[in-house]
Image (cartoon, rainbow, N blue to C red):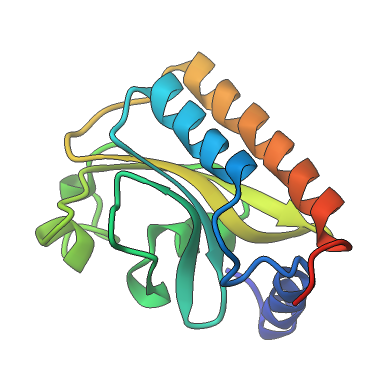
Length: 164
């Protein structure tokens, strides 16, 4: 887990992207669609995690949901470890078994998230989700990492040009 000063620096980096609460953009939506297709899952998100919620910059399969509270967000765990996180069956993982997103709608059973970094800090994730247990192949993990690298480049290139 991140220390308090590190979390402050992470949040500062997130704010410098000027992405929070901005309208959908084609590159982020295309990345979510590509991740969903390559991993064979119905849900893919590009999430940004601030101090109280995770907000979706791209949302495929979670129609009508633009954010969730950070305390129930799977992506919080991925950015805290700052590494790829795969939960093959949420019912068998004590961190998530009683999560409201597992026991209620949308009934998440599988989650895989790749942290997205800006200025070295994990600001969010590219994640894929399913309603059935599963396991990603080595190639699928590689593809998620490659898409994440492309997204990081898009975030970096656009940060200076976006207005808050």
